[in-house]
Image (cartoon, rainbow, N blue to C red; front, side, top):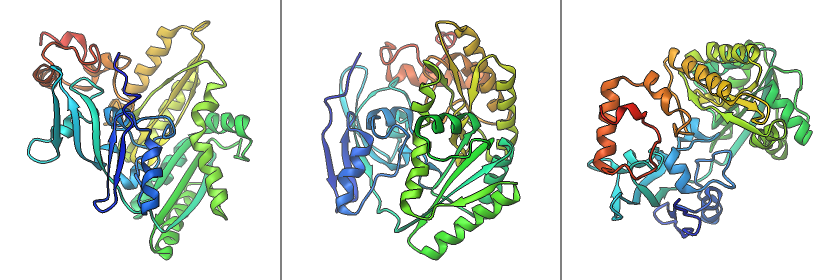
Length: 370
């Protein structure tokens, strides 16, 4: 095991709008250090108070702001990494984009030690709304309609009824317990009129889809709503001791069908299946809650496979930000053709000839001799 927890050097370069962060720097610490200079670091995974830059880079993490502002890889200007022979390298994004290859590779091609990150000024104005719906597919339809109408919210997050009730049991924030789906939305920008107009586009789409809209009257009310979304993980942890956190991405046009099909899988399953995620860019996090002391973990894995197949049938992919790892490694044969798997193995061998870096992850074992 290689730990990066003591690699916490962080330097802000406001004149270049950049941060240099070692792999062990906590994600939130970058924005906290940049804010006195009028800058922020937009990637904001729900775990931003505990996750590290190195982990975010390894998974190419997103977060609620990813729809408008992009994911971790969109903010990387350069990387330092250690290769399989123990040599350190510094790479930028020009010529062969080796930095881009390492981002999202889950530590299988090199060990990222430091990154140069792009910073931006925060928006001057932000407005927030919550909409709730009597059916999960209607929520997805509202999202597609709002984006088609020209809205580009900074945040578009979805929680199903099970998530909402888990958060209410945990924090008692006044969320609508009877709603089958809740949508949280931020619009932002430097022109208040444009921000409000954009929020109105979203509100209109939600109401046309049968949703009930509530605008946050104050910044504090908006912050409380977003606290609900960021509290989903600990809230679910109170229900079952373990959960399998799936991570799929599908085209927005397929979202209504996908959330309905996943809901049907949950209804037919003995396990409690909940859905939430970054619905603006089609990134969903179906979670299977279970107790390994009393429930069949093989059946949990089978249900995860069924969820993955739903995504693939609708033109999606196996992961948006949580990675493949070992849990979804065998699903890769469903997602990638043999020729492409061979090419991926060629890349792996070129950068890690002894297969020493995070072995057994991402690529199915049968591809080794391919």
